[in-house]
Length: 341
Image (cartoon, rainbow, N blue to C red):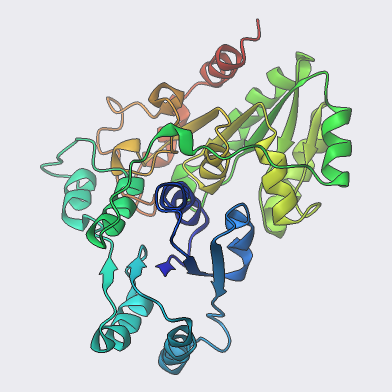
């Protein structure tokens, strides 16, 4: 059993590792304990099933976790890989260890991440990628993994609805743009993003598909759709499965340090990422993507970058860090990758 409950980007990063597990140990049957929404991420694996956790309902609280244990205990699990290592999974461990089931938890490297992100005596060096930290859990269980780029997933078949959209845009390069992130310090300022969109859309060579979620994001993206030609918001128009298929068929994804970057990387879609107060050194860079596809805030002007691992700590003035990434550099990177003059 594999445990990883949230968030989107972290769940997406487990997929390459599970792909390696499936490929290199085909005799295994794998159960992923996660939320129902994430089920489509694992649909391509025939020997992977999903145990859906209802954290707000029947599996809420201590009694809910005990209920998870009782339900899981009927599956005859041989070993547990905890890729989350949070309070909920630690309580589960208390139930499983006495019955002799190996239960290995991810080592998150909190001390070295603290050293990378602290203001004083910062140790600025690249840390172990999260994908490798996941793989280390399986190695401890006796399943060493080789994380190679041949773990990229194939394009998914489009539904009738998404195929109509793709066919309509066939003459242009289709670029996905996911301008949102969980924290403001990880988001490219909207006025600068508009400059990127203006060039790309008015050139006539690109069509932009805008990705996001939630009512507030939907409103912003619809406003962008109405402001620029060759721009379509896909928010709340398709199921998550359909969005994944659409992402797999993009020519390129432009995203923040966020979940959409990892979703695109699953399918080997060239992914340009913009980094503000976070940094690839923390270990959350999209799998298999060239590091030169990352455009970073200027550390000479903002030497405390990264100020946190997740972007939730922003010193005074650091809200402007993203502004050191020039729109013309974003456009130039996209053109270079797609070989558009």
